[in-house]
Length: 461
Image (cartoon, rainbow, N blue to C red; front, side, top):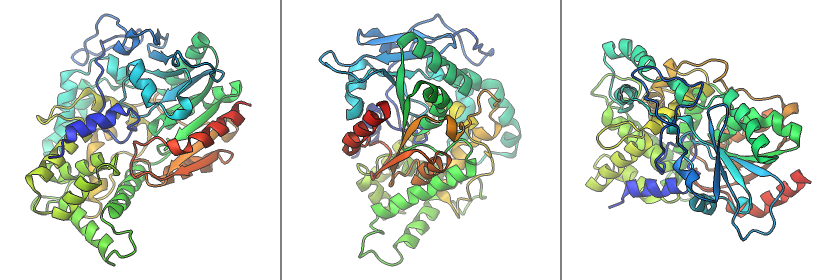
């Protein structure tokens, strides 16, 4: 039997799992901290004494508690390194929902062209603040996929706002920019930024500073720019996943049946909609589990091709193994244990992602027409009532204020489809571009290492 929980753990251990993927992450065990300026509301979060993240315990790691109340973790290069490029590299691995790891594991997971560099990253606020039990319970009621009653539809938004202090869990644009500048003052020049997935959206806040200091930015599989409508984001991702599933099912091969794509869509429609109950955002619990399991497994389609193919081929008579894969995958994707408990990671994901895009609540289609998009709409239900302000909104700088930029586009990415990289290219026409093809969202482009290194040499020259 495929052990999906172990699979998810292994995937998270590669660290670069990507923001909107919501793959399970390695929990390194943070102590809680309540920095100045971030007050927790009663019944939401319990402040505790200051303590550094556990990742800061080793000699190869140094940490700073910045005046913004954000922790920064700095990883020194290996001792045997004789030559290092000038300046520290700022890393945003995306998520949001990734915690800093110990130095040894972190260094082993960096792409080859960063192996010898000092790298630094900011710590997610939700990982050093307790997400209160009332907040987790409110999210549980909308994360398991069942239809909400009329009373829940009326009462849930206020319950969520009163129980979840999302400002406490998010790293907003102003904090991000200020923390970046203060980190450079403490550590010296930051030569550039490597940002993956949603990390590219956040790294856009420091582009003008990089431009001023002569730095560079590498955006790998970037999430859609922050001015993208939420419906567009969800629809394009659902279409990218269906295209990936077409490849899994052999629809793109030369001898594939002419109606292969139609048959796959029919299967997805049946898996994601329940004609016995009224149509809603994402159907019932079982339908939602099936759709979110497909999203979870798709973060690494290359490794998960067999379980994906088995599920789609065997439908509707899923074996016990298939059913366990579906349930486990869905739980990992929605940050829920088998008992339905929402993890703090999911609260942090919503607190950070929702303010980055506008238009939540419109949905991405019905379970009958777009079952994958309907499941995404359901998962992001909280975004439609998420409070935000000018500090938490993310906006792109003008092209003239951008540093030298390299866009890395994964042409087979089911999480951040190539259309997202194309949108970045339109907004920053002077950006360079390299493409790679990997069926998933967890593979750093190692085969491009030499080309990226050559680009960096030119950018730093």
